[in-house]
Length: 276
Image (cartoon, rainbow, N blue to C red; front, top):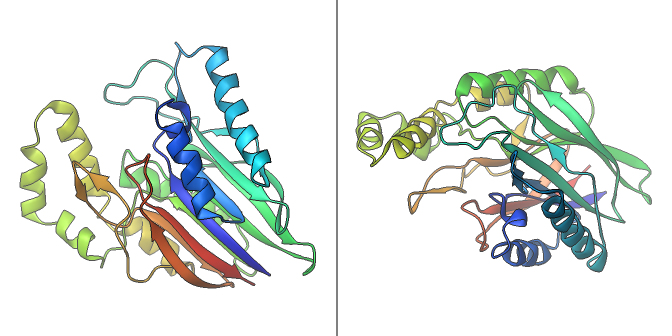
């Protein structure tokens, strides 16, 4: 079985009128069998039901036109909703689209520590076997929360069977060049001089994403990085930082890894061919 898998943090783009067409065009250009979308859109206490119906309707119409099935969006349901400047009731959604062949046989929420993720079985009807996948967006607020999510994930999967993890993990490998820079005194000084409290808060979180412990935990468990070059996938304050978005696998073969610079998000999409 060969699966073209893509993952993209679209920075709430499907819920923003001026960016939604860019995001949908980007998904079309990726032309993958399975697409995992982090931060597909966001809502808060002031969001109207009409907005939600419009976003879901627009997404499903696109999916049907280009041969995808759009599965039920999964709210993150962060255990701790305190965020700098976030509106009341702030919620983000994870979404997966899958083609008919190979098919996403089912997709359902799975709780990983502080956030929900999406678990799915992807099957090729001709091969008669499945690959278990989890699409996830690891918690951006601290390395401790990401470690909790990684630990919860490892307890839920069977490492004796084929498995794929895809999404924005908000974490870098310890030995990646960008991670080494983020642990430096220079980076710490630069973050402390960012203008405004929110920018400083964002900068401090970014520094911690270079810690490396989360990715180390996953690697020690046997998950392999589809992109050993650690290409940078995230832009902060007009600077392209490290590899936040990952495809990690166990007992499958990956090749043709690519990053895709697409309009509509501060993240690059990633894709790879998965063969079991």
